[in-house]
Length: 639
Image (cartoon, rainbow, N blue to C red; front, side, top):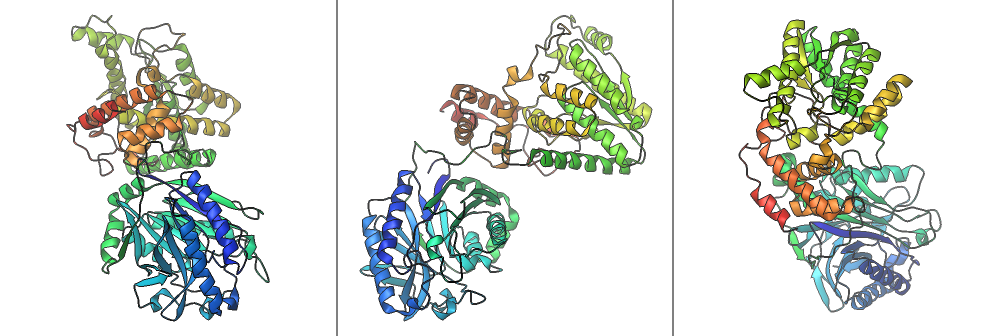
């Protein structure tokens, strides 16, 4: 365990029906394979000691006795293994037979969970052999000399990590045992299953697993039996899923003639943080948790050399396996829809926005034109103003002018050099020293022009600043920080790059070429008096790469990760691209600026929540302007 991550696995061994001793050999082999790969929690399929398809052999006392002897041997053989694992077996208690999941750790059987819902329809006849957990009266059971707790109300607990178990059909019920266990504090639900194959069933099952993990705010580890169970009328192909909070982290390939293991890392700390945030979950937990559950302790230890199996996306806002084109269109449509309502509310107002030839204003311009088109209004009702200043490059100016022309908006060019110099002279600045005053005066001059133009034209100023800038405070207060509506305020710079690139495919070749060049242009405020043919004031050389800051934004604000965990994950995500020292430096910059710049976020303009994170002070992010970053920065210094 490290930073709240727990390595889990679902295993599908070779099984011979009614051959317990062969089966435990295969299970032991896979337990040791899992241990070698640093797995801490492992599950096997339903009734994996005997095989699921034994039929009326389950009514033979000899099979039940042999199963118990076999699991004793298995526990003894694995007493040198630290991990906790679950195997399925028939267990006789109170002269009744139960389909159970048995928990084993360090040679001891520490608990057993009987199946609650027994399918008795179509090809399933489990009530012919087994009793439901609700029929169980005793709270303890025995196998050989070992005594252990038994029941559907067991939670395996280690510190702040809770484990719950359900079996196959349990997950198909309207109110699953796993859901109940999650409300009681189980963060990971294991399901030992024996689900046969039929056309289309796998996709439904996959959606069920991901849905349960989302609804329960939990992780879900599912393992179903393999081809050794295939006989008579049914085929079992071996499948497994690992999900977390609605996302499938891993899926085992089916129909393979081999033993297989699916391994991933579960972020228990994220699950706990999400439950802490989610008031609906907390209310349901208080409503449905009046009974007492039995707590079964198990062992797990923090380790310094945790080896991450799980893939860590460099861009969590647009993950590697996502459909970036579809996601970009969805985000764009959310922006357009938000702006549509503002336009409808303001009844005929024009849109006023500044267009620099950079990423943010380019996307805002595309949104504005699309919104007007949807409303059946002319693009000419978008007044797009480019305002070249003391450091504007020829590249960005030409892109801005050409794009405005091709989109058919009311394009205007208002140079700000003389106005900015006049203001600098008025306050006693020498107009030559390129300091913060020199830069911010230009930003405020541009905003002043836009606001005045909005009054003149009966319009409103559309803001363009993105979430990355909002988070880092990389904007001028009462300058580009201010607008009357901002469509980019909850989209990161990294995402805007992707959106503009994907949208470029929907336009003419001429517009597409401009959009691609905008994406490829270095991000710069262009506020210093430099060669108009060169962009040397590059933001990412000052602050650090936006892709790293955007990574921090997602995991600190969405997942509430600590500085140590942010650093740990960033090292994994950007391994081979950035050094640990670089990442540490950028993390320090991120935390410092995030805390210092809150006063700007407390005065954010309206804007739609588009992505997973928003810093709007109107309910999404509430933070005092005077909060101190000292503890976070001290933690970073220790890295």
